[in-house]
Structure formats: structure tokens, C-alpha cells
Image 1 (tube, rainbow, N blue to C red):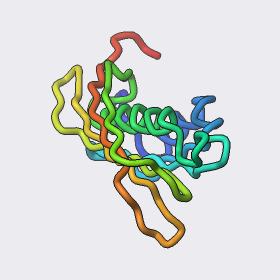
Image 2 (image 1 turned 135 degrees about the vertical axis):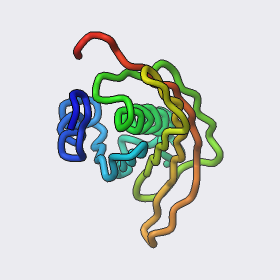
Image 3 (image 1 turned 180 degrees about the vertical axis):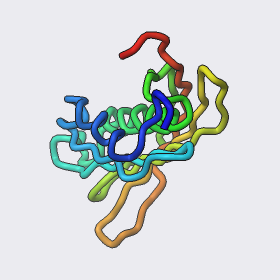
Image 4 (image 1 turned 45 degrees about the vertical axis):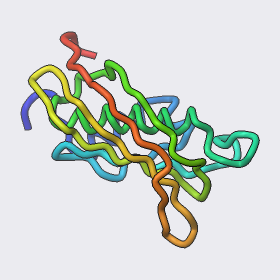
Length: 142
């Protein structure tokens, strides 16, 4: 493994070091080869007044999944340069799954797409939002 590359266990350690990720209860379920998947169990405090997942939780999941996916091709020293999200439908159910895939990368940046699915008790998952982001290599060690 070259400097800056992470395996799944190391990436999970990075996630565990993020206080906000711990607060939300984020789990990294897939990491490698341009892809990362995050899962969040929907607790009542992560929902808005109508009982749907709060848009901020979906945006956080997209942002973090995008950055982790980019880290699989750019290395560990990366930060989000920007992203946009489109909400397709309200997210309800037992959890949120954010699946991010690198669409293209240079040595210093990557463009990543992310799909966010609302998971239900019966195993069904419904696409509730999509996002796209740009992730950049940070020149100094973080």
C-alpha cells in the first residue's frame, strides 16, 4: 500500500475519528476501487417534523460518501471542494444508504456521483436523492 492509501479497516478508523459521524451513527460498509457506501440508522432525532429523514442528514451522508469514494483513488489527504444534492422524494424507513462512485479523477481531484436510498424494514430501498461532488487533494498532511 502506497502512502495515503487506505483499506476498509483504516477508512473505518478515519470515520470513527469524526465526532459528527459518531453523533449521527454513520457506518462505512464498503470502501475501495472508486466506491464507498455509508449507512445511517434513522433515529427520531435525525428526522424532521413530518417524520422524514432531515435533508441535512442526507446532505451529510452524500458529502461524506463522496469524500470517502474519492479517497479510494486520491489517497487519504482529501477534502470536499463542493457538492450539490437533488432531493427526489422524502426519505422514510429504517435507514439511509449513500453509495458514491468516482466518475473521473486526475492526480489532484475527483468527480463523484452519489445515490441516497431510504431503506425499509422489508429490505426494499427507494432512491430518495442524488448528489455530485468534487474532491481535492490537500497538499499538507492532515
